[in-house]
Length: 186
Image (cartoon, rainbow, N blue to C red; front, side, top):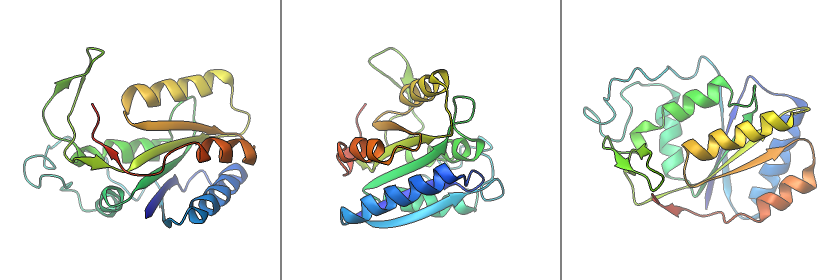
């Protein structure tokens, strides 16, 4: 089984380092082969909205940078864990950029969700289980609530956890998750 950990290399705090160690060990003990990818501001171009990933090279971004390998590793993993610094209740800019560049993995059409909002349908029949772990030192309740709300509203089939230095708490929450591919749920 394959696991991918994606993190922001510009937020290498003590909290991040501890979380990464604890999580990597836990995933490895579950018999996953772990690949880690760290993203910095010079590693990914920004999406230019050209729709080349839908028209010219379906399923693949036309920008040739680190995202090509990240998308390949993503779709070939059973579980993907994003270690996201919480910045004013949101993702860091580098993590947000990687999410924006994920668009080749969906189709260009629109579907209406059960709640009335619209979304792009899945390109593939299954995707890796996605877990987003927000971390930070002394996060406010408002930042935590905003991070969870924004994440769950805009990304389906994602579990959101928060880490503030309590190893036992994050491991218990992580151990309660099913770590395998999921269907393309709507």
